[in-house]
Image 1: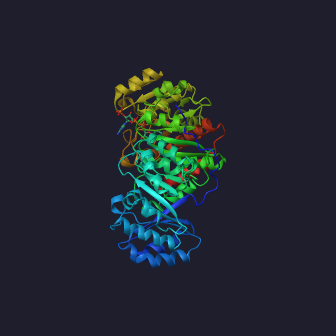
Image 2: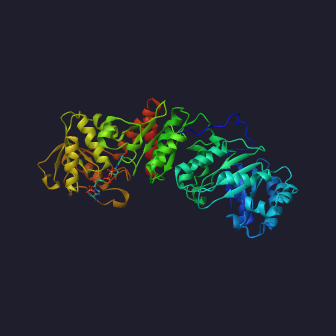
Image 3: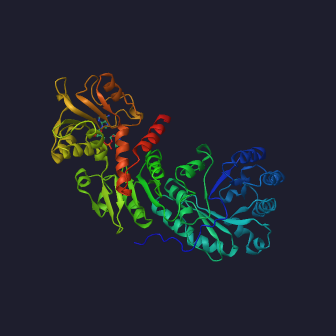
Length: 514
Ligand code: NAP
């Protein structure tokens, strides 16, 4: 399978800032006031003239605005309804508005391919865009489209920039787009490629790395108009989109959902803190083959695996380390020097790490509540460290099966009473999570261990953790597991020590913000 080839030649000299922020308001005053307010932070803006009820009446104000802000780089767009915008005029009216915007000093104007085709090559050639560059844009709000065919249609219009915006339903649908944005075109023009949809986040972040002229991002989350849009400040500060180069290693977290995952925050913080030239993306997919194909072809330097892929991904990897094989789940994949993919399970280290810093596990009596993915990691990690592990699960048969596999024993919940005492209790069921925040995993007052490790970390303080604190038990909050498993991932990928403290601070701050 071939990797995505980066284009030859030096693309470092860029005509524009890499981050373009669309500004849309229903009134001219609102549009230009918002544009002025954003300029100090975002000097490259797309002015969405089509969001105005009568764009033609705002053109004089546009001229004054552009003249008053020479530090700004403006892209004028007046997209018609037929092309997915809000302008109700015909292609001639769209063209006339863009020509005025160009005369007014906008550095670029965006014309939809459909309008260009309606106007014809000759009409467009004889149009005056002053010194403005022509961005020819194409959107597919449903699917991936035939990008080569779109380019073939665009070529006769000799645009300066082509903007290709398909919709991605799979990670692999980003690959042709990134491949195209990285090419040099005849006649010389550059491309911007962005896939709509949450699976298309990849193209929004990586486009410039692959040679795109620039990328788009809304100024705030509140102004995002479609799934997958990431606020400009997040794109700049967390994903460092303006600093990515073709040498930047790409990582990510694959699963569904991943939008609210704290892993991008934690791992990008780690890369930044250690000066590692790497970026970590959310990779939305529920198909294991989608992520492994994407990983091999992009290529990814490694990726985290989360629900629902931790087990399903196993058979698609070239090698799986023995502990992950025994657990039957992979949460970390690393691309080796020869291009093969190796699976690891750092959830186990996420459990044994915090425990071993508090007690010796050899001979320790450990009770695990649950028999799902997290419980499996806990059971195998503790058995590997020489602990005597007992398992209690809502469905007892699953506890029995897991106990047989791991060399542990299964108990009924009713066997836990005031007389039963363990050194450690690991709470590995979802009880206490936000949607289930009032629930306890055991009857009230039953806390049969000196040390309670609560794996749920959102909220940070579950009712069970609070009850354990009140009863004077030592506690380990679930966020410790999350940070440890992430730190181990960082170490597997970079072979450097993880900056655990900044990772912890970033995650705790995000959890406190809620
Ligand atoms: P899972 O595979 O779906 O397993 C859930 C387990 O909990 C099953 O054994 C299930 O029992 C049991 N369970 C579900 N609802 C229950 C209830 N209301 N009362 C009692 N038992 C219940 O989930 P998982 O991946 O193991 O994750 C479990 C929890 O661990 C997650 O909710 C997450 O908060 C936490 N976790 C934390 C980290 C971390 O880094 N801190 C990492 C992974 C997971 P049945 O067999 O009867 O269905």
